[in-house]
Image 1: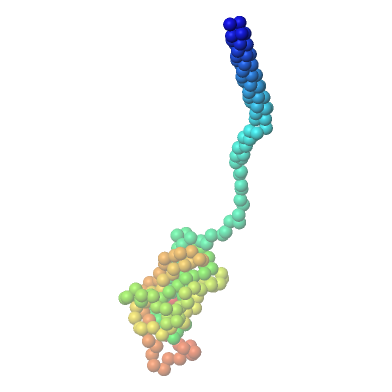
Image 2 (image 1 turned 120 degrees about the vertical axis):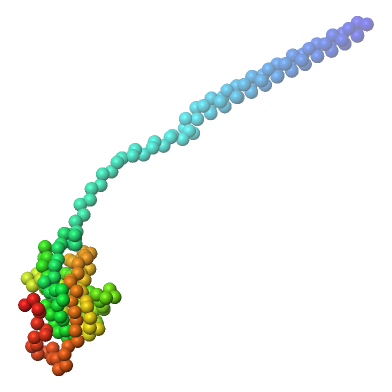
Length: 201
């Protein structure tokens, strides 16, 4: 009986020791894990400032003031600032095919270039420069302020001269309606002939 008590006592001692050791071991393991966790957390916190990206400061917006001083082109004289009236041809004037006439005008400013065309007064159609003998554009000499026109081979009838450009600017001027006639038989444009004389002279 005493042996049974001894065995029982030894078993309890061993179980108690084993349980105590197990508790101590678990406690040590838990402490070790806690220490490891704290160490890792501390290292991460220490390292985090270096791992964080520094925010990129926005580029300060500066207002740039750019000033240009381009060359100011000299604009052509606007047609609205010009007044043009034809001295020749005038209303009812009689011109003849093959004759050379001096077209003249009065204007409120000096004319350097003139865009012209011959227009059929009945149909309102433009007559081309080859047929009419009137160029699309003329360079006008400052001192003359007129142009010479050799009347081309056109159908006899009523016509007028229109001006579409003056000094490069759009314009709307026209002469009075005049008549173009076929030259009489035997007419020689190379010789002086009264029918080729400007009626305004």
